[in-house]
Length: 261
Image (cartoon, rainbow, N blue to C red; front, side):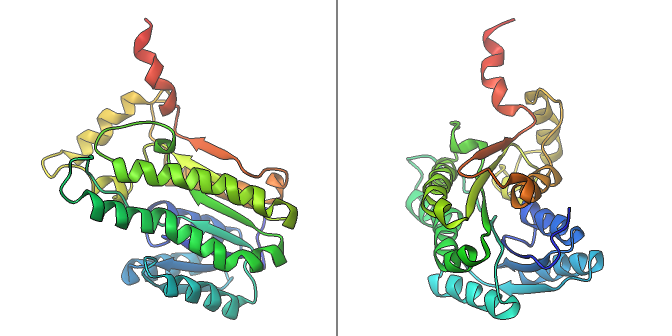
């Protein structure tokens, strides 16, 4: 499989899932437009990608909460490469808080802006380029788009919105030849989740204990998600659109496990 001469625009590319997606596409000779708010981490990821391929790596540092920045990202990517073949909306944050939380409304505003609105805006501005290239869009949601948990209200709501957005846009762009799909990771060890753990939490113990909740007795990795993204962007997935792929080492099966011996 090769993505030579294809242009992949990836948000949240400086760490976690976005970083691994960038690396996997670099291994397959794709040209990359990498976006993140963290300039130093983004530089490191870009260098990793350049060491894996002779393809071009273009970096953009921007705050996706500002709509003008989003349009600029698309314009600069098209200016650099002349096209966009794949858009990966991977940027995401999480905040701890329930309906009584003092900072809830501020948290909801920030989380929805990054996790949902930025993806909608990028898709809006990149739509014509993707129609022209008969490209595809991959959104990163979460198993929490369809499951329920305490304390992550803003995050869970945002991921449910990403799932619905994926289906709506898939329907709207299908007759234009653009495919739109979604990946819902389970528990992946990234800074997004580490940052919402209580300060008193033993992080290593938390992740070790969490393995027991997974039937495959392993956590899902960023590599697992990246390989799914590559598949969905490839011609092997040419008949797939509007779908949500759960990659969670069986985590969503366990909600029923305690009901029976």
